[in-house]
Image (tube, rainbow over all chains, first blue to last red; front, side, top):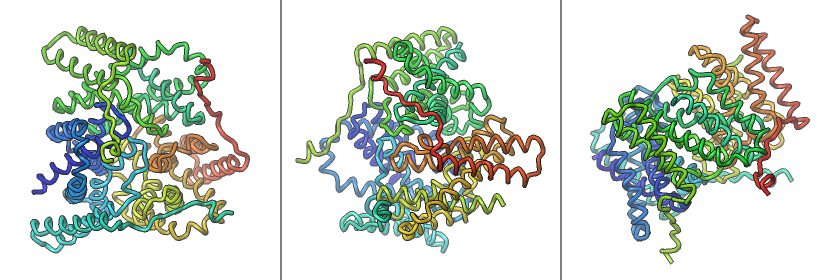
Length: 206
Length: 206
Length: 206
């Protein structure tokens, strides 16, 4: 089940990357590259940080083809996609959750300690979007907007807690996905967000 | 022959990096660092992604000295360099081709599959310029302008195909360089470019 | 002694990262992430470039907690911090020096050659700030402003020279810190800077 969700998720992430590239008027190559990096960049950063070589996608060519195809298809489909915005938000949220759980598992298998496991989950979840925004020369949105990375943190915590207490894997996954999805969609619906830090030194210095 | 072209190429790339740093009014240190990263960053990203440690330049101090010297020399020579713009475009194109072929070979020697080999070639070819643009806070030019990364893809494909059919290495290199160079210069001359993806959601939503 | 200075330094770096995040109106998560990356990103880039796995902070959870806590505390303390600007400049300079020396030592222990050792020191010293500025979508300040990276280069050179001649470790550290600190503070006080490269091709072409 996690693999199916993962494939859907990297497709959705690749499309979000392609749209961002389109806003910067990139050419086909740029669109394909940003789609690839948005979808697989989080896992790549995680693998490199954890010293987990070879990096996952180098052993799974279908991931490369899928994300590049999804990116290029977006160039044609973009004009119909705004009608599917709701669907995309759900796919994106499911991707965030799937990436987080997969990231935690990779770090667990490598024998890392709890704080690193949680960070591996969050990095896998959010770094694709951060790399996309860096390449498109904008401040990373996941660090500014509604609860997003926090969903990743919550999911990582819940998943690891249930796993620690030996809860059945299927129930754990179901609980993680439903809780994470509910929280993310509620955050979008009611504009929940973490406290924002507004720092303008002039305000206090003058 | 490939080594000679490589040395010329990293010098040319270092100078292009230094010019970009100069447009941002960086100091000598910034110029040297951007020159170094523009010239050797593509190979570094490739080595890290492929788990190819130690990273190439750490074993070849002359590459470090050459790129930093080229970057610093550019501070003095910049005012004469616009007369050499044609030459630079040719050196840059030869660098792109040399980087691509070297990148493919590194991945081949590590036993990676064909899609990863092609991506290693392209990454070696274009990522130095992408890192330069990220550090200079601008949208990566290779993702927006005339055929550039596509030349890398074409060269990688041609090189690997000829290699696969057992063509003599010298002929393969000659064919790769002449085809890649012709395509790149034609793209500059007649402004060939890949289809560009213009995405402005407002156009369709209102 | 180096460890104590290191802990103070990553705290100060984390706070500088948090302030930069606040200028971009990031939320709590963004502040924590940028604080973490500013403080530990230089060492992470060094470890990855040198193939030094596992990356240092993954084996030291307290570094993770300390930098994230310092980042979040900055959200509350920011309004009082401009009074402490002098103190911060000193802590930041001590951090730069400590990071540089630690970076040189890591590369030495891995058996790298002198130029790579020096670059490892400089990368550890300055890359946290570079990553901070990339994530906050601004041109890296350390490549533009008063002597900063040069202090790192001077400290690396002095440290390695005294080490080479077998000078007592404590005296070497003391000399490195006092020289580096004096140079950095003098640079701030009298606006010393390296020659800046202003490149505006139009100036010469028209």
